Length: 115
Length: 112
Image 1 (cartoon, rainbow over the protein chains, first blue to last red):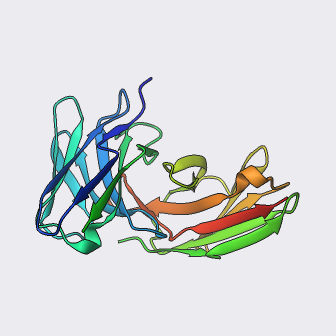
Image 2: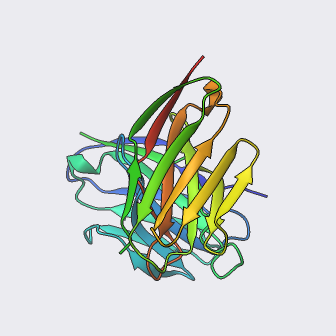
């Protein structure tokens, strides 16, 4: 069984730039959620993708966008980067509709630093 | 949406003592309550969870209790060990979605 993998693991950008983060879901999982974890805080829900459609969104502006592909992998795109976007971005996969709905399996995260 | 409050924010115990972390939630329809452990620089990992049809669940040294009437649930760690030192997060489902709202975390430090 393959776990959740994310890339890149670390990256540095400057204000105003754009970034794309990638996630491969755990084998057999059809749903991907993205979270932002600022230093010393709990993960904050950004959005979720199910069957290639956005299936819920947290309190994040439209410059945070995403995609899910037919193989259930996903991308998170952030435009016009701001200093406060510096955080660990976590991808979590899950199996929607199964008996264990709600269980999330996290990747190691992508640590973004915006200068 | 769901609102999850977690206390305390930090907890220091001596090795062998018990540790208790408490969380409250706001949505009475929530039915799934996991606890995650996050070591420094690592991913959050599920350590135990409970669904609303039971009041308590145990797994070796850890247990979770749920009080649906009061809308709170707690993590209990007995016979703590230094390797239990980490940040612990509680969570509850976002209304209508199969994703989670997390508490702000509790940093547990177990001293030898």
